[in-house]
Amino acid sequence: MEEAIQYRKIIHIDMDAFYASVEQLDNPDLKGKPLAVGGSEVRGVVSAASYEARKFGVRSAMSGIQAKRNCPQLIFVPPRFDRYKEISRKIRKIFFEYTDLVEPLSLDEAYLDVTVNKKNNPSASLIAQEIRKRIFDELGLTASAGISVNKFVAKVASDFNKPNGQKTVNPEEVEPFLEKLDIKKFYGIGKVTAEKMYQLGIFTGFDLKQKSLEFLEKHFSNSGQYYYKICRGIHNSQVKPNRTIKSVGAERTFFENLSSEVFLEEKIISIANELEKRLQKSKIAGKTITLKLKYSDFTLQTRSKTLPYYISDKNLLIDVAKELLYQERLKNSVRLLGISMHNLNNQEKKITSEPIQKSISIQLQFEFKE
Image: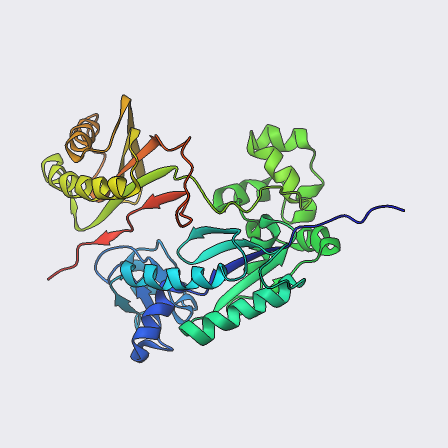
C-alpha cells in the first residue's frame, strides 16, 4: 500500500488596496470615492489607488498627472506610513495566533504555513476565511487569500477573487489551474517578460508547459528553470519567518525637476540622514552604495560603488553618493533621487525579532507645495 503524499498547506493573505482602504477607514467621507495615496495632480507618483480609482485605470507607480487625466475627480491624499505600519502590526498579531510560520512580504501581504497550526484546524481554507473575517471585524478592512500546496500557487490564487475573496487550489487542481492562466498572471513574470513570451507564442500556462527546459534557458537564461517548474506547480521554497534584510534604501520624489548637481547635493544630505537612521535601527552596515536617478522622462539610472569595508555613517554615505552623482553628467532633469545600501553585514546573523521584509526601503516621500 502506497503512503499518501503529505502536502503543505500555505495561505497567502493580501490586503485589498491597503493604503487607500486605511485612508477611507479613517475618513468616512472618502468611502466610495476614487482615491490616490501619494502624488498630486501636479507632481509625484501614486503609491496606491482605491478600487474606485482603479476602474479609471489609475495604478500605483503612475504619475499624478496621468492619474488625474484618467480620473478627473480623483482625490489625492498624502501617505501616512506610520499609520499603515500600526495597522500592519495588528494584522500580523492575528496571523501569529494561528501559526508562527509567517513570512511578511510587505506591510500588506504575507505567507502563512498552516500545515500544523495552533488551532488544530485541518482546513487551510477555513483558517483563511476565519483570518479574513477577524481582520474585517477587528480592523474594518478586507483581505483576499489564496490557499494551496506552495507559496507560488497560493500567491497567484490570492489575486483570483479580489477584492474580499479567496480561492483554494487543491493538489489535484494545481496543474489544470495554472494551464488555463494567462502567463502575465504568473507571479515572477513581469510585463516585459510577458511580452517576450507572447512573441514566442506563449500565452498561457499550458503553452509555457509545452516548452522544453533547453528552450526556456536559451530565451530566458537563468530564469528558464524557474519558468519550467512553476508552470508545473513546482515551487519548494519554505515559508521563512525570519527573512534576512538584503538592502536598505531611502528615496525622494521632488515637487520640481532638478537639473543641477548642486541642488541634488542638498537632497543627498537629507536622504543620507534618513538612510543612516534606518541602518542604525536595524543595526547593520553595508559595502555597496547605489545612487538611483529617475529622470523627467521617467527613465531610470543607477550608479554603484563597493567599498572594502562596511559603513553606516551618514557622512561616508554622503561622500560616496556625491562621488557617484558626479561620475557622469546628468542625462536630463531629475524627478527622483534615492540612495540604497546592499552587500550587508547581516548575512550570517540570526534575526530573532519580529519578521521583517527582504528589503527595507523608506517609502517615497513627496515634496508637496505649501
